[in-house]
Image (cartoon, rainbow, N blue to C red; front, side):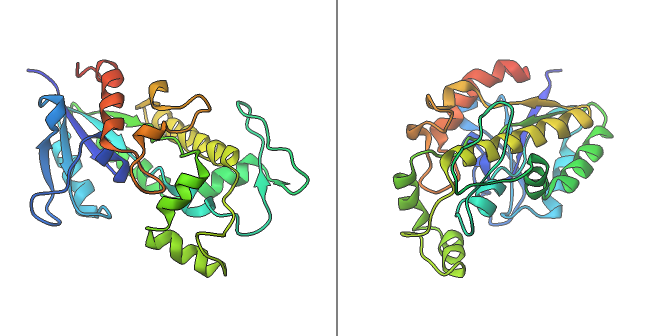
Length: 249
């Protein structure tokens, strides 16, 4: 019997082929069209409900679960430079050195970005108890590095419009956190996912280099028209590289 592959998770899973359910708020398994049925996507309500995760656990028997977890918290918290600019040291990327930037400990950044991971650990524990279930945590798309283009898309998003207004500004004028810092924030999220996988006996699959531009940001042609997400072409590029790595080729 061939192993079943199930893609599930938060909003970044849509760029990988999950579509909205045929009936609003229904939870259903759908074949991902361009993968010729090799991977099924678990669609459901947004935001995800406890019933969605319960359904994933029920379906996970004798399956490889490809799990997409969060991935937007660095932008929800730090896209705008509300107070003084900040930076932090990360071994793989040098600090942004300016006289204005406040250097903060990486541990403080990790704590700020770790929200929701307690539930992730709980979910991974449940999946480990399902007979024949194998879990692969998937990396989430890198941030968008073109600030002018990014600001254009932010204007359409109520969340960021309201966030800017709360800070006493608007999306046209509020300062964006330096893109080099945004890239490092995303790197911390990937590190947290990799650690969650390792601590729970799972695999972690980082995003392929082919989705990045020369500076490490999401390629411009792979942007969805918002501040945070990739488009379906990202999914094509992702799976071209990753199907063989998860054993579904």
